[in-house]
Image 1 (cartoon, rainbow, N blue to C red):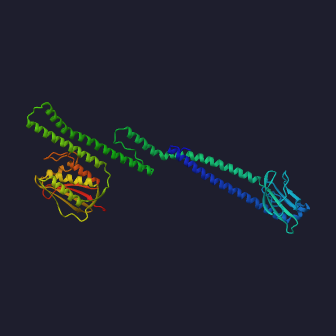
Image 2: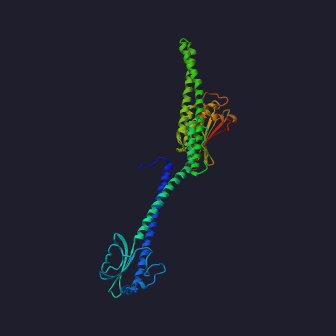
Image 3: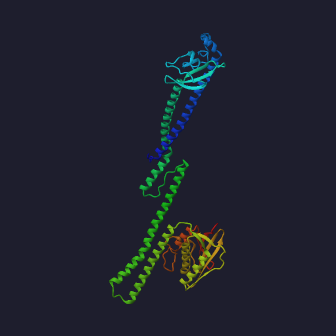
Length: 458
């Protein structure tokens, strides 16, 4: 059997099946209980009648049964059973019936088995009868009272049909009620579905799903989806801005490079000095394009990176970065301040943190004082570690510090060419490691760029 695809149908069927099982079981138990009670009542009345017959057995044998006045309930005064029910009283001597009193069935009544006193159920003319047999105190006679179980069987059949009817009706009502309740419960989900269809069809990414107050689970789903749309909107805007900025930044060096190549193609006899200048300019533009593409690739890797990482010792990282930077910038001084804490471990992406520190050192060496000093230090700042890079150049005015964090942004008076992606890369890697980038004034008057990163285990 295939499961319905509709959640509403599944809820309705589940409710109907649950009610079917509960009502059917309850009805069967009640019907069985009532049937057992009816049969116990028959046995009790048989025992009462037999007690009376034992007392008046002499009258029965003498044929004085009509001398006994009727009981208040209209029965025969010998413990008669339910009004209108078939009953029979017999006195037997062995297999011989001495007295029979009551409503005789059409078929012969079988004699009770020898020495088989007590209750039993016998079949007379195809119908069940309840029998109670006892032997008199002198052991000469046997007394038997019988009661037809037809009323009991009819009542059980009626109760069975009643249980079946109630079960069917309850199941149908449960299915209908489950359908209506499921419709009410799923209405908020339906609103979310229609809202998502609107988002899919509408290019306005600022669209939000309708706010759902209850039920709580749907309300949480609505909030989660709206938060996802908010992140998608920010990501889309960032992608559009990034694409536009990248196109703008690449257009100028590519156009210049094309112009230089076109000049060399059109004028093959250009003087050697001018040729050299054109080739150097073309090589510079080529390096700029390569630098831009490298920066974009690194940013893309950082955007795709999963936050987390592994333990990184900032003291070792800083020492290695300073050693390599000294070889890249032989005209200046890059040194490590020797006051790093004993435990300078953070959790992050090692390659990303190394890239961020290299960019900070390169920026300090390029924008600081020519032949100046760049100082790298690791210190403790509360429950965080501070990885600082300071130069002794002119610094960066406070009003421009937020702007230079953006991609392709440069300072107000850049003295060297660059892609404008350095601090954006640093900001990105700081965020991936759960930290932040601070820009301030250094002790020597230059710029102090500090990475604040949470300590491992804090």
